[in-house]
Image 1: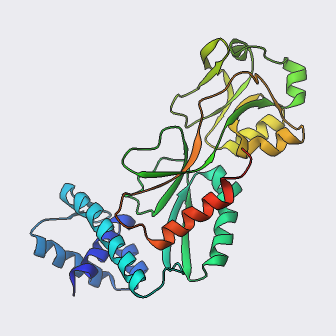
Image 2: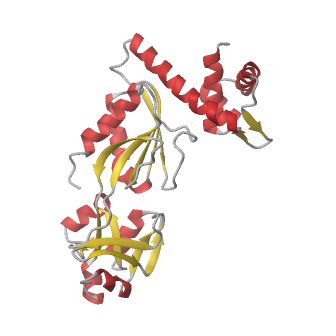
Image 3: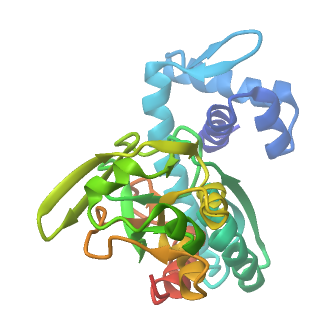
Length: 297
């Protein structure tokens, strides 16, 4: 069997962490996939995988080879699409990773509409707020809310994502409206659990920067949970407007400390560097930008 087939089998095993899962996706027997990888190792004279009874993982050499294989296979796919004049239609499988709240509020509906444009494409969408390795996990694209995109990935900005301090009118009537960031220390705060700064809020205003150790009453790794707690009058929350925007507009939540801003953040599409971007990936990112970039923050 040709080397490209062996490389495809190897990359599937690494991305899925299992010979069985790779075989199921490739619609081959487990023994066939294993043979492709063994043949590849024999040809290269290098052990690419560490195998145990319950797991499989790349060696150091295997990890480097895996990353190169992904780029090579993407180039081959792009060349095949060009030659077969399929650039007007996305095909195959597109693996997407996105954060939970942004995924449920925006990516899910966007994916459904994108599938309508490209019926020959299959989508594998994984929602998770945990930071994942785009290359190691085998994703074509990762959508992330960040103020510092990782330097080892190509980052395309999809939309701005400003964050707002807000609370319900009932809570503010009961606890008072803070007039300065220092006053937050006397309030109940609802804290997002995966911020790089930990339970601290950085706010910048007319008198400079303030780092506030928010005395949280609820800590969660999901923005919608925190929003619902704020709506129920449980405290002050710092969340992106794509989560709380509609509730600020209808008055269910009220912004506080409007003269102070948290660090600017944006939503990015992140993908591994490659000479040729597969059409399915380019089409999806273009679709997200078209759909969301003009959306009011």
